[in-house]
Structures are given as structure tokens and as C-alpha cells.
Length: 280
Ligand SMILES: [Zn+2]
Image (cartoon, rainbow, N blue to C red; front, side):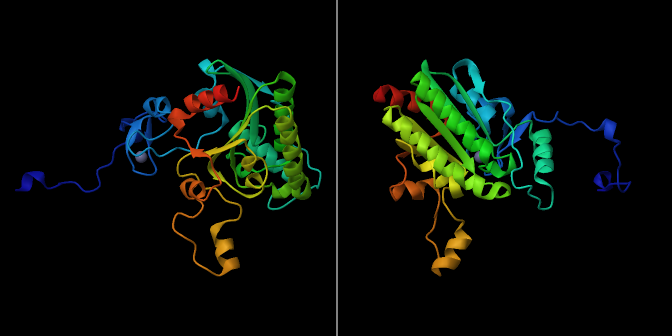
């Protein structure tokens, strides 16, 4: 049976002869490894058609999922971070900002926009994890505060989509002050009887969980999202006990009373719209 044994070893194919699908045409689910067309994935609100894994997406994708005809007006699009502490770790902070802006095309870790969602006027602030781990610094706090101001002035509901590792260490105390600032603004929104909905996505941790992410009239989350304050290792070492299974998953947090409901991203727009209609 020599006809199927390879006569030559190490067959080489020049790069220009190789046939490959163009980049970005296919998406492979990191959870179940199922391969689907990127268009199909996008139409499915960036969730896996097979196992429903919710891909971690940024503000651009959320805005296109939520706003009617993906039309919206962005607020404070050019606000960019200063360097109040002249901070330097492996890089100078302004250099890190400049490199991240270049790499991501974003100016900071949150974007705010207003527009119509199922015909309801709404202001949405959405975090971008790609920008220094979605960390909350002065720009994040200020943009959220101004987003709330816009909601107050125009009597619109406010939606916050969180995805964050917590406070931005390069701004230390300034970063922590954003927790108080955003919380105070949300209190004004509450006094004006305007609805605030907080959507927690994978992951929402640290100072963000400890401030605006948990202050919603409704706190809702995406399936399987990691939600917590400190990481599991730190907690395990502090309390000296093993942690329960599924600890810090959205489902666990819901069961323990910290969330109102978990929403599939495909139903997000419908659910938010009917919730807001109920509150009007
Ligand atoms: Zn999958």
C-alpha cells in the first residue's frame, strides 16, 4: 500500500499559495469552540448561537445593540486624562494613556451617549474594558457625572453598563473620589424621580461594584458575569475558608439578593424598554 505513503518529507507551501479566510470573517466561541460567521455572531448580539456564551464587548457594540438604528449622539467624546500625581510604574502614566488611545481608538474607559431605545429617550454610559482594564479614573467619573447631568436636565432615564477591574491605581485617591462623586450625582437623579438602571457585565469588580454599579433602581446582570468586590484569592486568604462553588457569578449574586434579574443580551433592549415603560 505504498500509494498513500508520503514520498517527500516536509512539504512546503509558499505563503502566497495558502488559502485562508480573510481575518475577522469567522468567530470562534472561546467557551464551546463552535465556529460561526462574524455576521451571525453580531446579529445574535455577540452571543454564541450554540452555548449562549456572552462575548465581552465594548461601548460601540452595546450602543449598536441598544440604540434604534444604531443612531446616537456622544457626549464629551474628547475628554482625556491628565496626570495629577505624575505617576510612573513600568511606564509614565501619560505614555500609557497615549499608547492605549492609539491601540484602542478610545479616549478613556467609558463613553456616554444619548438617543432613542425602542422610541424611549435614554442616556447610556458604557465602560470599555480594553482601556486599562476598564479602570475608573477622573475621566470615567466626570463623564458619568456629566451623563447624569444630561439625564437630569432633559428628564431622561439613565443606564450604566459596567465592566471594570475597579479604581485606576495611577490616579490613586483621585480615582477613589469618583465613587463619591458618581454616587452623589445618582442621588440627585433619584430625587428627581428619574430611573437609573445598572447593568453589570463580565467582570464588574472593585470600586465600581462598590459605587455606581450597585446603586441602580434596578441592578441587573448578564449571564455568567463575574461580580464582586475583591478577588476570590484575597477573600479566601482573609477568611481562611474555601469559597462556595460558583462564588461571584451573576447567578450566585442573584440568588443571594444583590441583583434584580439576569438578562440575556438578545433580550436586553426589549426588557429595558418594557421596564422603563412600566416606570413612566
Ligand atoms: Zn459557544
